[in-house]
Length: 528
Image 1 (spheres, rainbow, N blue to C red):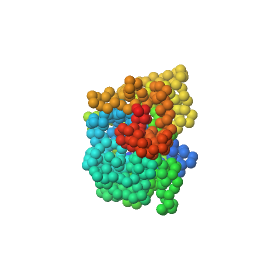
Image 2 (image 1 turned 60 degrees about the horizontal axis):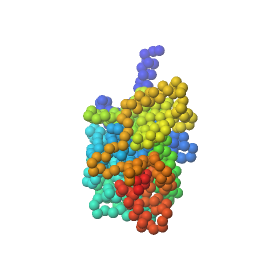
Image 3 (image 1 turned 90 degrees about the vertical axis):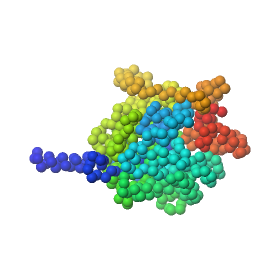
Image 4 (image 1 turned 120 degrees about the vertical axis):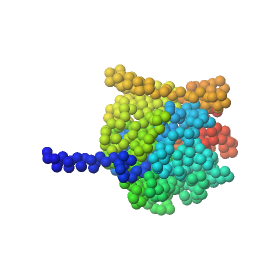
């Protein structure tokens, strides 16, 4: 082979292996990053992950233009996901093992409960000179005037709960029956606080449109410096209302999960088109993931179905059209952002993940040996072949040989197998778990309120139920949780109550909703 041919081959290989711009590349502009977190969206819902009916051409194109991870894990419920994503830490490091049961999250008055006291991905990006913004669902701690900003964001445009509103402000539209009670609206006539100010909206305003527009506006306003946007979509969480019809302005499409998902896909297309028109697309990374499995199809279950979400990465240097079998999870995002931006992770705290860029840019095929998901004292552990599911409350575990499959098809339950390869795999998983602190309920401090679902009237109760009465209440809870999102909002509560007096029903709802978040958790329901 001639020297000319060798040189030509090397140049071609190098052109296909370009990595993200970094400070080590003289004169290279730092790339922008948009991190998108879809709400209640499991991987199996997207066309590019094999769904036979859902049409998701924009997300399918995003995957075709970049890298799609077949196995990407979040937590089975949103709060532990959001904290893990923002901190780069599993719950045994950040304190948020769970969401609805206070025994598995920090005490409300502790510094650890305040997201502003943690080092976040926005803090990381600001340290490298990035302009930062949060857009969409927040659902974490904070109060005005430092709300959201104390977590490292320069600007924000958030769906606001009643308690997030400035003093004296009342939003007129809620998701409960008749527009009263429950959470403030996130879809039609959305409740929005933008940079500390209440943003007035109308009944014809659709929240997801306004959030998407803010992302593009922020990007265009910061063309002269690198920017980081944490875009926490309200779609596809229930209630699944009518959506705008993109093909017929002013018209609406029927209220179905499918239409909500397909409108999210439409917005992703608008986002990428807007970046292209602004001349920003070529130097912008987009990372698209979900916060947990789909409601009624995995969400809140300590299973792979509850943890497996989309994982799509596109940007400068990403290998086009690559489908990766490398296992990855939420904690990998923080070190990925560090490598993209050139920022240094603090050395005074642990980070549990590894940068995805070596896989995304084609420098290596394998990423890490195992990934992890958790909810309360339940855990899911996965490697490229084997899967262990340890349910909450010490229920019977399940161990699967997944082979080469990543979507549940063909998994073999080998829990009781004594074969050598199964026993070797189980021994390896046991060794991994031995390195991870066992999730235990928090011991209440003096004056701390007792955990919902814990001892009451001398009787121990847990979310798993320990007697027939608790099991019956769990059954009633599941019936009343009509959208399967793991909680009963006021509208669901009033629709499913046995009485006919809405005032007494509302009073009882407020009594059960002890944390005042507009939704009754299973633990709150059991504690009555």
